[in-house]
Image 1 (cartoon, rainbow, N blue to C red):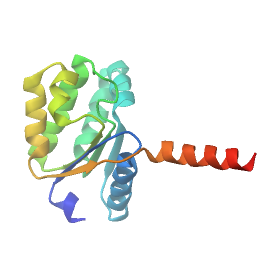
Image 2 (tube, one colour):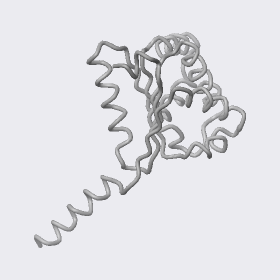
Image 3 (cartoon, rainbow, N blue to C red):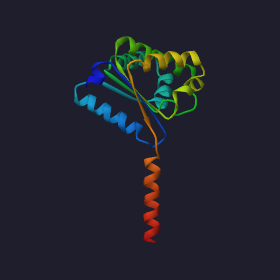
Image 4 (tube, rainbow, N blue to C red):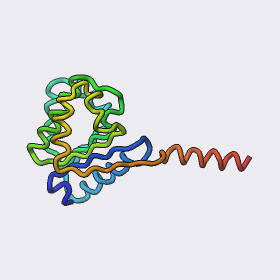
Length: 162
């Protein structure tokens, strides 16, 4: 996979239910099939568990993340804000992976212009975006939620059958 071999990034932004995570998982799966080491992280859960982990576990987890060829950060800023420690960790991850020329895929339903608000620090968000956006493929997903569309079709079908 040239994308991963070149240390390029992808930022997948869009509304809820438009397939961002699905595409990120497909990229991760494809990378694994081509022999790359991948770390897939649901960000809210990860930041919470990381903060509660003993220092030795944190160090091992951070090392595994930095050594992987591809890091997928799924649903970044799903919660409107993240703790200060999580923001610092995110900055460290992006900065270190940038220096190592390792790929990162980020999915988020938050536009990048608002990231400073969610981090509580515009300087930190600028630093993160500066490194993430260098050599980055930006994908914007628009449209209606597939889940809501499917639910509406199911409801319409059941109503019609009644």
